[in-house]
Length: 350
Ligand SMILES: *Cc1c(COP(=O)(O)O)cnc(C)c1O
Image (cartoon, rainbow, N blue to C red; front, side):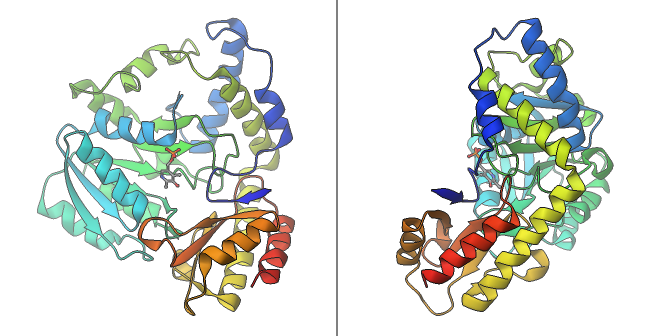
C-alpha cells in the first residue's frame, strides 16, 4: 500500500533504518551529537537564528503549548477550515478568550479582515494555519504576518504542520513568533514529534505568563537547549529518524524540494479539474495537499475503496467535507512519478 494521505506520509527506508538503531541514553555524548546535528538543520528549515524546540508528542501538543506560553488573555483566531477552527478550540479549552475571523471553507483568510479585527480590540496574539489541510488552501502567510507586524505587542502563532518541509520559510524575516510543525507530513518521518520555533518576543512573553503548563513550557526547553537536551526523555528513535530526514532535506535543497512539490500539485490539480473539480481556487491551492470537489455527486467512499484495492490510499474529506470531497496528499517522499502512477490508478477506478 502506498499512502497519499495528507499525513502521515511515506517514509524513506534510510529514515526507517535510522529509527531502528540500537537504543542509547538520552543524557549521553552520543545523543548530544545527534541534537547538535539536528539543531542547525531545524534552524535552516524554519529560517531562524533563534530556538527551534523538539517535543515528543504530535503537533497538537505544540499548538497547545503555543497558546499556553504566549496568550495570557485573548487570541484572535483566523479560520478557513477544520484545522483553523481546531486551533481556536485548543485555545478555548485552555481558558483563553478567542475571537474568530472566519473565511468560507475553500477560501483563504483575508489580511484586510485581520487588519480591521486588530483595530477593533486588543489581542495578545493572532493564530493562523499556513496550509489548511482540510480544504487544501494555502494562506498568504507573508501578508498576514505583515499585518500582525503593524502591532508591536501582538504575537503571531502559525500552524505550519502540513507546510513545513515543502515550502521555504524564514520566520525571523516574516516575524512569526511560534511556528509549529509535525514530522509526519512534508518531513516524512513517522508521527511522534512536534517541532516549534520560538522567537525572542515569544520567550519574553512566556516570562510574564503564569500558567504555561509544564511538559512543553518554553522556558524549560530554553533552559536545556544549550546543553543539547530536552527537559524530559525524548523519543530518541524519532530523533535518529529526524536527523536522517534532515540530511535528505539538505541533500535535495529547499528550492528543488519546493519545485518538486509544486510540480506534483500541478499534476493533481490538472487531473482533478478534468475528472472532478478543484475544491478551492487554483490561486490559493497548496503544494502539499489537493482537495477535490464532487460536482456530479459521485460515490466518493466507493471510489476511494476501489483506489485502495489497487494499492493507493487517498484521504477522505475532513470534518464537514466528508463525502463531499476527497484529498490527495503529495508531499515528503513522493516524486512526480508516484503521482503519475496514482493518476493511472485513479483513472482506472472511475
Ligand atoms: C495534521 C495536522 C495537524 C495535527 O497534527 P497532529 O500531529 O496530528 O497533532 C494540525 N494542523 C494541521 C494543519 C494539520 O495538517
